Image 1 (cartoon, rainbow, N blue to C red):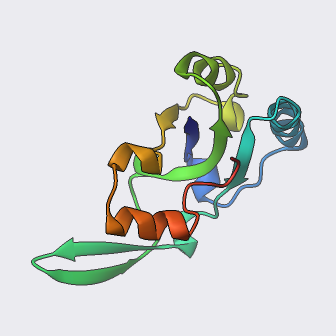
Image 2 (image 1 turned 90 degrees about the vertical axis):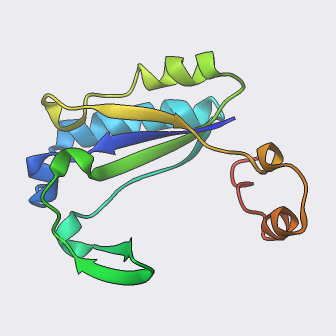
Length: 137
């Protein structure tokens, strides 16, 4: 089972303020524990939305929108992906995640779909052939 821990943006992360050294240390310690336990798949921070874009689909058209985006609480600042044996194990790791930005914030834990959940079919097989969703297996 793969899960993604999503770290919501803050005013500082959206302003491009880099975390302090002690935050890097806490995150490195946590991710090192994940790696030693064999559950770390990937993790990284994201640049502010001022360096990003969105595609809006409306009335059958694609509209490209340049960042920055105003709703910080709806923006992801980083993620950690883990592969565990159970939802309980995912929750255990999730609850140990260091407090991002050292300020009030929210992080989110979401289970990722596995290709097996979609059943069989030609198009699903195309994803299998691309080895989609197999990282960290």
